[in-house]
Length: 85
Image (tube, rainbow, N blue to C red; front, side, top):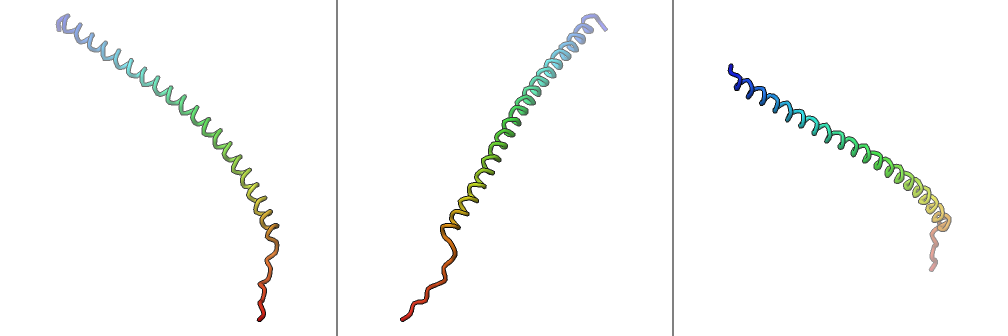
């Protein structure tokens, strides 16, 4: 094997290692960014979920109060009146 052939093979191998390492580093960077974004988004969703749960619980209490108020306004059902001729 000549020196030139060996140099070409080693250069190609070095190029492949360099490009492979760069691709792996780029993929690792993308994965870290996606994980950070996902974590931030999960915290935001949890905060919105907590807020909405609190608001829904408050509305359920208000609806119960409105039902009670309507029942008090309506009172007891009156017996039907009989019309005489």
